[in-house]
Image (cartoon, rainbow, N blue to C red; front, side, top):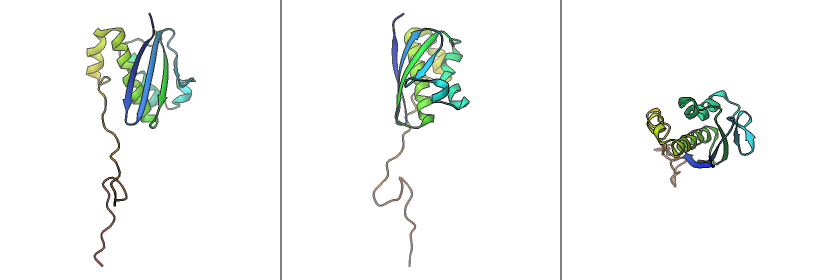
Length: 128
């Protein structure tokens, strides 16, 4: 099997994934998954598509992650892994889509408006 690549985005995070057959090693920016995401919850989020299809330990995953915070990065990585798994086996698409792993969450931070302290917050009005 050759190398399969896919991309996932969330907020301002971008994850580029390269999937090859292997032992289940996940390397993010040349760092192990457990060191890059110390939180067990974020590790779980990343591994969700693999656990759903019972493919843990079958593929080595190399990831380039940039932008955003750790939550956005983990969710972008989940989307990228799910997209790569669909490229390998198209029959898995329904299971991943039903679980919501193929849906791109398009919510991003609203821009700050001029004359206001934040995007929607206004300065306090004073009559006198």
